[in-house]
Image (cartoon, rainbow, N blue to C red):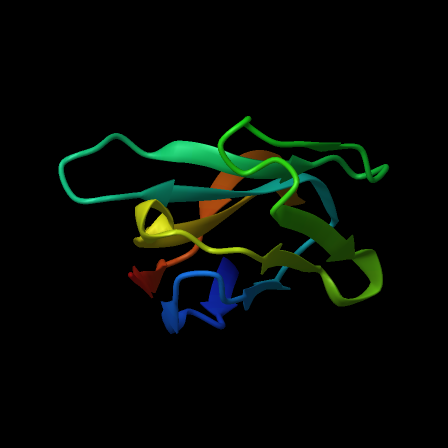
Length: 119
């Protein structure tokens, strides 16, 4: 059994910063790519940041230069530093990871954490 547990969401004013964390636990052999997605009301879930096991990152243009993803492989944890937040960043943010567990390669999701940016 593998779990992803997120923390760090909340309410912030426009221009402010938040840092999200996501820790993976359970019967983990290895973790490949990790990422953060978000879903706003009435919209599809979208990728906001991804990071490979080797540390290569990718971002959509909407967050490039404002968001930074990082990971601590020793702690099985991925982070998302969000700066210069805008009201349009308001969404539920989900952690995602591709994990080998008990001989199987699966895609896991966290439960989501709300980020609200007020104008």
